[in-house]
Every structure is written in C-alpha cells, then in structure tokens.
Length: 167
Image 1 (cartoon, one colour):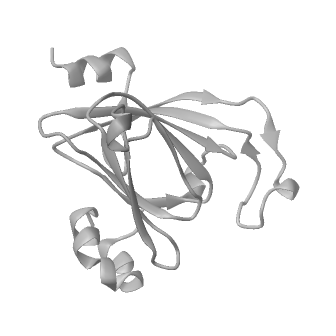
Image 2 (cartoon, rainbow, N blue to C red; image 1 turned 135 degrees about the vertical axis):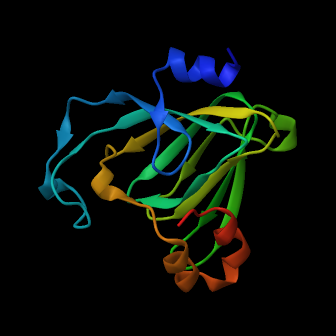
C-alpha cells in the first residue's frame, strides 16, 4: 500500500470538491448565533471546525474562497504552495512546510474572502495538512467559481487561474 493510500485509509479521507481528500476531525459543540455574526452569514455557525486535508502531486486544490479565515497546518510529505488572490486582485503565495531555513512556515492563515488554491510542490508526492476555520465551516460559505467567472474578475492572473481551476 502506498503512503497516500495508507493516509486515505487510516484517516477515512473522502474526495473534496476542490480537489484532494479530507475528513472533518472537529466541530465545536458551541455555536455562534446569527445575530452575532457578520451580515454575510446566514444562520448560526459552530465556533470552530477542523479537517485533515491530503493533496497529491497529480492534482491541485482549485481556486475557491470561504468567508472565514482558514488556518493551514503542515503535518507531513511535500511542502504545499498556496496561491492567494485578494478581492482587489493582489496576488501572494506562501509555502507551508517544515524547511524553516528556506522560508517555509508550519502554519499560515488565509484571510477570509480571499481566493486561494494549493499545489503539492514535490513530484510524485503528497502534502498532508490540516485546516482550521473559525467561525466554523459551512458549505454555504464555500464558493468554487468557474474559470470564466474568475478570469472576468482577475484577467491579469489568467495563466494562474487557467492552471488552477477545473471548470
């Protein structure tokens, strides 16, 4: 059994709509009432949620966004590169990994309402990470745009968008 197959089986990972595999590992019992949330949210949310996320070098996590900040935590495998575009079109990137002398960080926060994608850096490898979201994740807060819609919004990032979208 390959390391990828072992991780999928050991942690009961399932395919994620953006690419890769995931398993929710934590959803707080406590909830934030809708009156206490930003007007962009509809309904209540858990205080926090957390997932395992596995990405392999033969695929990518497609550009998407959520309303919440998302904290990425590196666990094992290849470093992973995050590609981030703010709502005003500013591009940035961050490598999450364990080689701190090369500028990699073991943890990184993607701000809410930023478009982001991810790719495993090393060929023939995988990146095993965790993602924590607060207020807790709800698929109602998740947006996976079409390539066309993202290109209309950010034409100056055309090459990157074509590389990291599926539809």
